[in-house]
Length: 216
Image 1 (cartoon, rainbow, N blue to C red):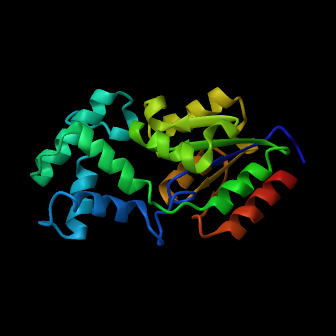
Image 2: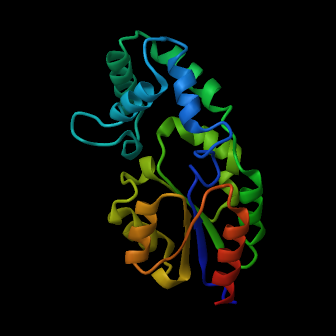
């Protein structure tokens, strides 16, 4: 077992629920329904997703200022034909999204191997989600924290993987990425990273992948 290795975990889907239980998608639906009942659940998710992209084609997860968040809120107000102040929007967003289920057994397992290797987070998220991820994972416990809005890049853009390699100093074959999204996994594989495609429901698969990686 080499200590010169790093395990990098995604957040959404691996720790925070995207697949069953009370998911981020249900929280987004419930959040919009605080203001309007004109849309079906499917329509809400479609419009919500559309609003994540600004007029320059940038995803809100790539942008790191509060003004970017205000512009995102403006797009949501316009597209849903609602009129919610920035303060109320942010308060309601945090309240509804704090209810999302998180797989704490996955968090605990990843932290349990910290004596054997470095551990890190690599996640696409918005500025206003940092408080929630910190509650769920205690970011200070990780050796590296790579958040898209702070890096100005978003998975599966290969540049974010390159930047992770540069900032961490680890070679591709000494990296294991745990992620629930096929596109994110494929780019990591292309760069020579070890990968485990799993959700928070797949703790045994995650354990097996991590243990095999650390033994190799």
